Each structure stands twice: as C-alpha cells, then as structure tokens.
Length: 313
Ligand SMILES: Cc1cc2nc3c(=O)[nH]c(=O)nc-3n(C[C@H](O)[C@H](O)[C@H](O)COP(=O)(O)O)c2cc1C
Image 1 (tube, rainbow, N blue to C red):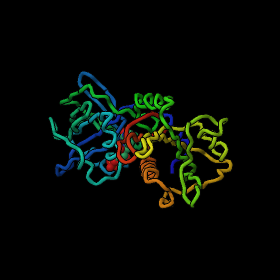
Image 2: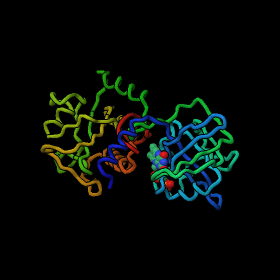
Image 3: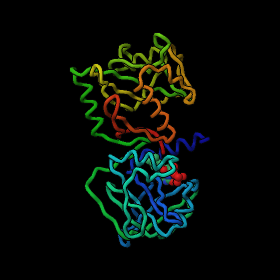
Image 4: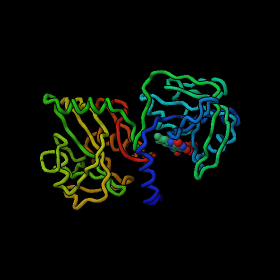
C-alpha cells in the first residue's frame, strides 16, 4: 500500500518527460532477460558512461547485478507494446521480439531508436534501487521517433492534434464517452433492458451544457475536470467516430442512474458492445501498470498508440 507522501513524490517525478528503454542482459545460462525502464540517463562522454536504475524488488535483480554486461534499447513510438510486455509478469518477454547481439551478448532489440551495449562499470546501492553504471562498448542510433513517457502515459502529440481536428470537423459523427474510476471502482450507467454502458454524448463539452458528456456527468453527480484520452476508433456499422476519455475521481456526490463496480467484479456480460468490454479489459490491464496508452483504429482491430498525461510509473 503506497502512502500519500509516496504517491505525491511519484506524481512529481512523473512530471519529467522521459523516453522508454528496455534494459537487457543474459542470465548465467545465457537466456535473454530484460525489463522496461525510464530511469536511463547519460553520465559521461569521455569515457562513455550511461546509467540505469533497477528496483531492488525486481525478480531479475540478481541477474543484472551479477552480470558483467547489459544493454539499453531506446524504444520507438511504434514499440509501446514491447514496453508493456517488459513491464508485465510475462514468462518469455522475448517471444515476440526480434533481437541480435553485438559486443557483449546482451540482447539488442530490432527497431530500437538507439542502443548502448555496455560492460558493467559499477553497481551503486541507492535506497530501494541500484544504479547500474555502464561503460559503452558499442552503440548506434537512428532518426526513428522515440516513445515518450509522461505522467504515466505514453505521449503522441501529433495524434492528439489530429484527433482534435477530427472533432472540430462538422461532417464527422462523433460519440464521446468516459471511463470513470473512483476508489478502485469503475462507473457504468444503467441502460434499458438491464444493460450497462459507459456515459456518452455527442461532444466532450462543458459542465454547463447538459447535452455534452461533461454536462451529463455533472448532472449524474460526477465531476471529472482531469480527463485523458484513452481510445479513438471508428464503428464499422454507421461510421461514427468514438472517442473515449478516462478520469480518476476522488468521489462522486450522488452518481445516479448508474453504479460503481469493483474491477474484479464487473458484470461484463451486461455490457452490450464487445468493443466496450475490450476497452474496459484494456483499461484494467493498463491501470495495473499505471501506464496508459491510447487505442487508435477500427472497432474490431487497431493498435495501441500513445498520447499525453498523468501518473507515475
Ligand atoms: C514506463 C516504465 C518505466 C519503468 N522504469 C523502471 C526503471 O527505471 N527501473 C525499474 O526497476 N523498473 C522500472 N519500471 C518497472 C519495471 O519495468 C517492472 O516493474 C518490471 O515488471 C520489472 O520486471 P522484473 O521484476 O521482472 O525485473 C518501469 C515500468 C514502466 C512501465
């Protein structure tokens, strides 16, 4: 259980935008291992030294502290799923990743924006982490756009601009919905026929306008001034653009016409649309990592892309 001071500290740290890396090495029998890290920093140019911090709670701590080498792979904006895989308890994190080795034998991930293959220089004890300092033996870089992480979200500003322009285009039919989380519960509106659904309207709007999403939420008793884009997709049937925001609120005055459900007790069978169920499942998975992406695509397929805002890793 994290206390308020820790949460505030993490929140403040999350205000610093970073790239996202995969730190790799090999274990004693030569198996590739790795984890997602945004604590990468350059240290020295001559000699070439970089650093990365590893949590003392990491299951791979021993492998990294004992290994004579490690590599840092800077991920591209197309590699967000790799970031999620390497931050999750997946048995073989490398099963869907192509990689090669260079000077030290540490995995170098294909498609990385840049990589640094290092001999371990020092391992410094620092609170609940160790700082791994690496002497760079070989490195390379490309001009591919890197993945950016800020306040718990993967960032893609170009995408946000594109979406806002689409929303301003009068010829596009738009539906805007919200995933509202309050004290580890998700809000679903009661619908006719016993169904449940996310609150939605034809625009995001403002709390003064009851025809808009923020206005409707206000009437229900939910105020969500801090909301972040979570999903943008097109329905296959009537060509509507669906835009979903997510918001975490501290409390709701009344929350009428709906209910809050515990995440492990959501009656998925009552949620009418498959895409709403899929979206909620993704939300539950991403909140566990405190790293939210944005899904962009069609109702049925699509990919998780990136966009701005809150949280801490
Ligand atoms: C964007 C992001 C950045 C992270 N940065 C670090 C980091 O710098 N150091 C660290 O130890 N863990 C970091 N983590 C958490 C680890 O990736 C995560 O705890 C992972 O499960 C560790 O795996 P392991 O215990 O299997 O080694 C980060 C996670 C994310 C999503």
